[in-house]
Length: 352
Image (tube, rainbow, N blue to C red; front, side, top):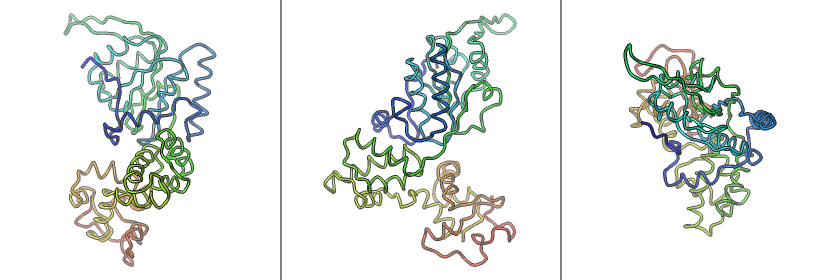
């Protein structure tokens, strides 16, 4: 493919919500809420580049989905006063795709590659020279008669985003002059984000309603904004349009989001682990069969939050429900069971 996509949509954002999601993005660094250390470091990098009238070093942003990596990339371009070109790692399948994209960049333009760890290896190797020397070698022909034609590139800034920093190769990671890891947000930060989004969406959001939604948003702005839109729908149809704590609770109950932010899949995993397998240990493939999902879905979508919330533990013998998981389901963990004593017992039929 030679035509790079002009925009990307995150996996957990529905197409009809993409325009709304973009409208809620902060436009300037001063509008960006949270990540204070990253904002301070990035501001220094950008201000220095502006004063020197040079493109800043290439930037790498890592962290879980929905924390604002794409927003920060767009803010970088806005702060520099330069255009931005947006693509994703899976869209760059061949070195020729990347060469066509790089040679079309104008001086100072920002190139944003989301999920950069999924870029094809031949394209990644071409990217090394482009990042260091602003040059690419285009190979014409095949076999002994092949000729490499060097092409100079206009100086540009690459902003890479990844949710799996550990999958980046060393040579690619080392070519970024600035790297930042983004952490989950505190509830009070999400309340500020919800207040700003409510003003943009013309939603009458009360303080107690913002507290309720923020507490169920998993520390993730994208989830907070999505829940706000669904609570808004409920408030407009079944109430007077005002989002209070009680309205937020009733709305999120309809959408199967409980007080910890667990959704249907999360609760299904916990329920299967506790009720069917006695709290574990049990292998992820067995859990996936029990809940009717693929093992990768359970491992990459449900497990990270369950582990972070202290409801599930990964052990060498399989997944184990913690006492907090039993309590969340209204059950008491068995005395001496895996939830209270993870060190005893041998392998079971359901071990990973």
